[in-house]
Amino acid sequence: MLVNDVPKQVENIITTSCYDCHSNNTDYPWYNKVQPVAWFLEDHVAHGKEELNFNEWADYSSRRKNSKLKSIISQIEDGEMPLWSYTLIHREAELSKDEKKIVLEWISKLKDSL
Amino acid sequence: MKKINLTKGILAITLVALTVTSCKEVKKEQHIDNEHHSDGSHDDSTMDSSNDMMGNDQHASKSTALVANYLELKNALVADDKDAAAKAGGMMVSAFDDFETSSFGSEEQQELKDIIEDAKEHAEHIEKSPIDHQREHFDVLSKDMIDLIAITGTEEKLYQDFCPMYNNNKGAQWLSATKEIKNPYYGAKMMSCGSVQKEIN
Image 1 (cartoon, each protein chain N blue to C red):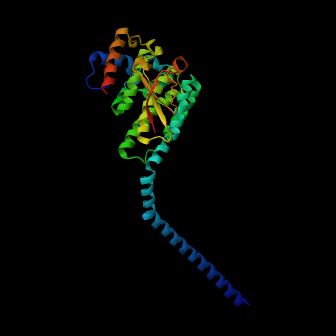
Image 2 (cartoon, rainbow over the protein chains, first blue to last red):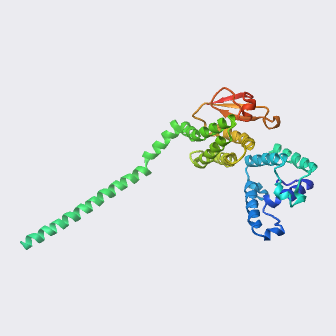
Image 3 (tube, rainbow over the protein chains, first blue to last red):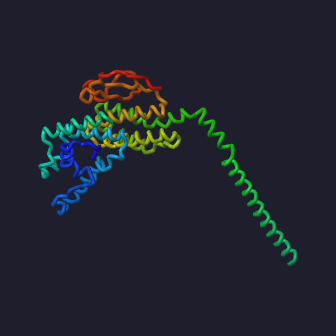
């Protein structure tokens, strides 16, 4: 996770809504067995991890962490993440208004503490 | 006749052999001489003088290409020109790739490495994003450039400007070569919003 003391609630939201594409623990769905869906998906996950990989968080410099947190905030605020093509099938990954608020508040606090 | 020819032949061969050998020896000597020069005081003294007298200038020239590309990007955003901004972003990516940090001290090298790693990513995004995103990335890229120039110096006089409104009133900085405010975050919408924070030489 980002740091050691992530509130359970925040951790759950991030794991559900972000980890499939932004960590090394992708939980591939059943339709990943179907081509060409698998290629499309693999490309997405690879790109997602390239942009942001929570498993590599510790290796990012503070400057980079700060940048990433800023991008995370703006992507969630603008509703660009999680991707609609992802939440279309993973309904549980869609962020409710409350969830958005909880995650954004926590990330902003983390960013200010860097 | 035969004997004379033979003697001539031997003489010729001996001459050739002698010439070749002596050439080799001369070359060897030159080679040793060169080695001596490169190992010895000659090179050290050039290094010393360049460090003492040209050190800062050398570093400042390292940022020249980046600053030029950055200003081009900034001007494109001022002009609300997404395509020109994307192109300048691409040029910054190559300029970051070409940036050579080896002449800096080890702490500065680490700092520069962090800055470049971060800034290059923003430049890559600017290369392929709509203008709103380009501006978001330009915000952080500008901070990176300000920090980079604090280490390298700059050949061109720059103005560090600040727009208090951008990013939900958190404000954002940028660098410009002219004193007059031309806002890259809002373009034509709010061209003159902002003020000069400081001059960088």
